[in-house]
Length: 80
Image (cartoon, rainbow, N blue to C red; front, side):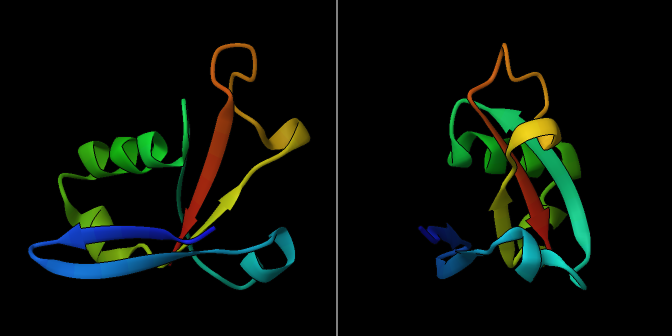
């Protein structure tokens, strides 16, 4: 499911991709949170706003890729 966001009154879509589709893309960061939008929020506050200008894709991590799986239900990797 793609994420719909608004940045300075412009609507943007962040496309969900698979692990295979992420190959060749630039990893911006990975976050663990309560849902995908929470992870997106964590990316924004840790990059001082530049994150939203760069991010185009996201992938939900599974298995050993997850960060703190006992504390957070979802881990998301963000790509340019």
